[in-house]
Length: 328
Image (cartoon, rainbow, N blue to C red; front, top):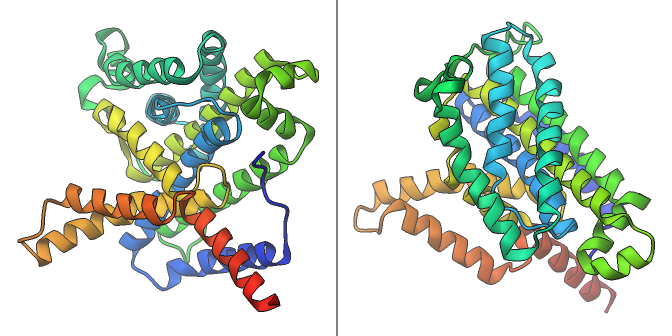
């Protein structure tokens, strides 16, 4: 059974080094690059929610773009219509998406495997259309969407992009610590036991309906927080920003980073933000190359072929191989 790794000295110092690097990064790059790294962390938060649900609990979802949209629109509506503070709207968005995810998880209890995937697919397809529906147009802005303003920088020495970068970094670190603590607790062992053998888990006294619905709610909450941050950072939400392709991208990022990992979400987020841009740059530099999405697909195939357990899984195995070589 795959479990979260314990905190080894290598993992601890690697985490500290990553935090230091992340904290210093905005001082060495442009505001646009800072904005891109903020987007990567937002994706990472959404991927963390998907990993908890699919990688650790075994409930397959290809509809997390719907929860991403719920979080984004909850935040945007609170800012646009009620003039809330963005930092108050984020926890409100988290609560709303937890409730939505929990309620969706109730009927999903009867579904498994491909049937659950189809149900989440239907949710992802229906959500953009619901956001355009005339009945909700006053609140959602319909096809036009909603424009909101970025909050002022927290400190005078920071730009707005730097401030949002640090806010996103702090939230991502807090959620990663929360996820690691939860998965290493008794509840986390129950969550993973359901994935490995639901019948055996039920025999051992695990309340399957409760754990599966709560896990769905927590997963949706993480993705909703990411959606709220997306709305604040981009200053705009519209139904077309939350199509089914967003759900596919989240699944791609989860697999690339490592679907059964917590640190892997960082690599998944970076892949989703920077690799399409690199593919576009390659096409511009070499016009004879195939279209950018074909180049992106090639990168994806190479990663899956050489790192079938994701980038984080590859690093773990490479580190274990290096340690064995040093001991021999």
